[in-house]
Image (cartoon, protein in one colour):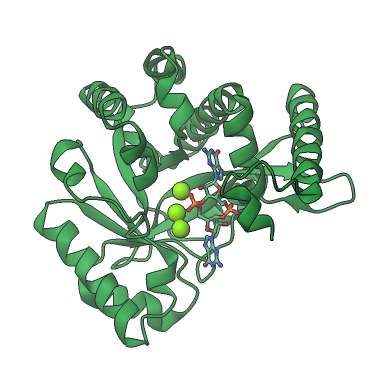
Amino acid sequence: RAKKSLTANYEYYAPEMEEKTTWRLGMIRQLRSDFAERKLELWYQPQVDLVSESVVGMEALLRWPAQEGGYISPAVFVPLAEYSGLIIDIGAWVLEEACNKLRLLHERGFPQLRVAVNISMPQFRDPQFISLVKQCLIQTSIDPKSLELEITESVVMDEPQIVVDSLKALKEFGVTIAIDDFGTGFSSMSYLQKLPLDRLKVDRSFVSEVNAGKSAFIAETIVTLGNKLGLQTIAEGVEKREQASYMLRLGCDEAQGFLYAKPMPFDELQVFLDNYQVRN
Ligand code: C2E
Ligand code: MG
Ligand code: MG
Ligand code: MG
């Protein structure tokens, strides 16, 4: 019923829509004040080289502590942050925080690690975005190639020209670029030609079912496509040994998933790195 009212016939008044709007506004208000009080956290999930199994980098992932304990999923609150425009400030903080922490790791004996940061569409529309990225790198004196920006296919399709122009400028500066959740976006693949990409992230949905026919073929096709285009590939959501070995056999370069480590706070990441093989 809710779905039907969403198809925009305003004569059918649906109380649950109003509830939803109220809930959303409440969440946004809380997110704004929690962000202002520096309550958001940035966690990190290691990424490993599939051949050597050494850590090559990590993805930075937002965490929003809930009042009742636990965390509100970024899958829930990032869309609200985008919708409200808060993602501009939150995203700027994520970039700074990720670069500062990477700088620390570089100083503490892991000079080869990179960090990947997820970027939303509103950030590309922000005229300050490119200079913000450059600022972060200059202030921390991080080699730009150690910063990777992750964008989804939907971001690319949303407003191709803005994204193409921004990515070209950032790429010229030396930053690397990955397409996130690759294969889930129902989009034209022509952007693979237009964008200065470095890496394809094979979506978890294809990796998790590499034992079952179709997903395995899709995973294989994405890795082959990446290899032929001269792009690096990374498998997302690797939870089982056999998924890792299957992806390795396909020629996939890297992996990320619970098999190696879940996302964790920075302090835990440091302990993890002290006890794990790290590329140097
Ligand atoms: P994503 O960028 O595709 O991130 C990967 C998600 O997969 C993360 O969920 C991670 O915790 C989860 N994951 C990793 N390995 C495994 C595994 O082996 N099994 C399973 N089942 N899941 C795994 P998370 O942290 O909940 O983030 C969800 C999404 O929220 C992210 O998807 C990303 O799109 C968005 N997000 C997170 N942080 C940020 C941020 O700082 N900025 C923006 N714009 N978006 C963010
Ligand atoms: Mg990502
Ligand atoms: Mg992803
Ligand atoms: Mg995914």
